[in-house]
Image (cartoon, rainbow, N blue to C red; front, top):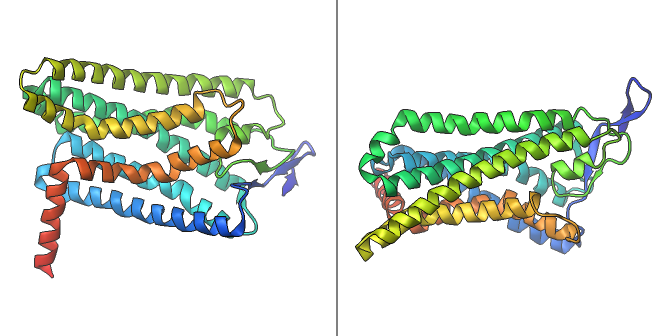
Length: 315
């Protein structure tokens, strides 16, 4: 469980993830469900990436951002789900100290990058609907590349500090994390150091990311709705709304789950409810994105049909 450090106290070398307290039959059922969701998530998001890379009609800013969203979702589920599946069938539900640090960092790094990317996609929809004639000029390939790079760099800079400090703390007591994966709040509770500075830093950085992302998304859709309402043609309004409906659905789901987990007070909330929402966000939500865009977007469906025809001809 631990080893002696220089001060003579025992330092934790591995953590135990409690997960869900379920019967063997329920664990087996949950394993099957999560495995199916995991495989479908990989298949759906890989399909989106392939379509965007191959289909000429998808070579626009919107689908470039969608491709990056799919990449983030793939990395997100690869960070969380395999260990979750392993713990469901293992008698020893442990994770090494370094493994926990890596999982915690990539969970927040990728989640933050997705948060920022969703706000970038909101801005993209704003330009497409409010400035359609200038869309290709404003959202050119260089701008898109810099915006995506900004997502990754912003996520890196806002998460590396708190996570690095978190795993420099001493963990000399319990090593039991009451969660399904290595999340920030359950881990920091186990530390035997003063955590006020780290909590303040994490709160400031997460608030900046949350408020800035929500502000960009909120103002973008405020202008989008205003523009749509002013349109004379009902057909034009429907077409304009359909171009952002998929993104609005994805943004609402992601923001809603994230705010429930990290922004709202957790007092009086069942731990099982918190764990269920965490699983929904980390393992299930990435499944929705490719299917939401596929079901609602005619260009993606057309590109998918073209790829199937091309594959059939090759065979």
